[in-house]
Length: 445
Image 1 (spheres, rainbow, N blue to C red):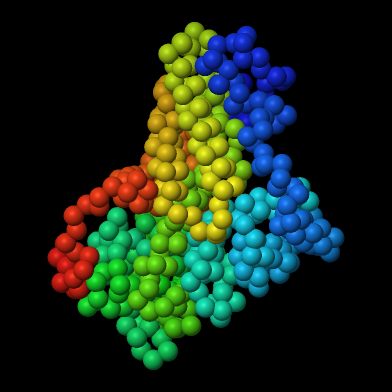
Image 2 (image 1 turned 90 degrees about the vertical axis):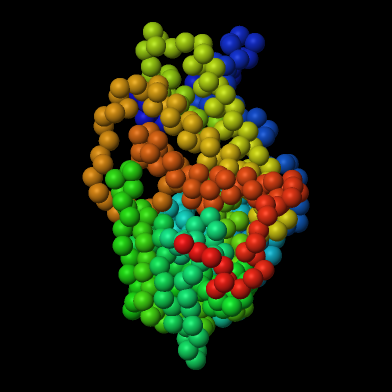
């Protein structure tokens, strides 16, 4: 079986008493759906409660009037938004129905079964910008941006990090100065994924340099085609330039594009960041397979010559598969238990675990491949038009290189550990001397 053959399956039910434990876990990664345990489905009550019935009734009406197989995808997604089935946990009129967020899975499952196209990977940042605008934007901002964002007519990027403000995001210095009904923005942003194809950017600026650094920030929706916006590629280890740096020179941003109140950019940014960690920790979207990315290692193992296999390596493979499966089930449980639309700091657990597992897992895959891992990869420069944070869509060699970024993007693993210690476990915070004084008096490089 070739390592890239994702259709490889084992038939029948595995009898755990007849195989070694490690071999059982490795092979379970490629079992058919009919052998999945009850943990792969939502509780039985989900099909009978009143909120689920509301969603199913709305879906029945949507699919009766709009056949996704016969419609343009943008038009179908627009009809879905109008029916409140874009984000069911959003308010009515904002593409939602005011219901619990786990019911989005019901919508996704049914529209997929009806023939709807999957969400364009280049729309990844919809999962960040959508909740931020729905939570902090006024009615005019929500009306302007949410629908074309969901339909895919307008794609987004994130403009947070700066050369001097990465992990210390609140130390950013990109300035926005009020000029009547507009703001004049000057500064530089960096590590901006897919900024080269984005129509709008989630821009956080410094509007009051005399306020403490967390208080003087304001959040905007930036037109990436506006005069004074320059996007330059940053070439990565993969050979591509998925990342960019963005220069802003006297860019005029209408106050009507402000998300949240002046000086409240930190609060709005936290919503973006929590949803980013949730999206990355969940594997970048979609419905993960049992065992998640560890299935890639299983396929390499099964393609190996028997003479190269040993019990110690099989045991490591089993541990990777178990770790990935535990992460998948934990994310499912967190989603089912959610009672509000925005995740909390606990999603830093998923993000941290996902990042560290991916790096170790694909290094393991390269070791299994041996010398073959060194060939068959194209390092030529290219500018991608989609996003795959796991890297699995482009093969094992690409994944090995791409997942190195997982422990940096969306908050470094070091920052995730700080968040878990302080906000989840309640441990004392690190001593800080820069939180209460004016931002413009804080020493910077």
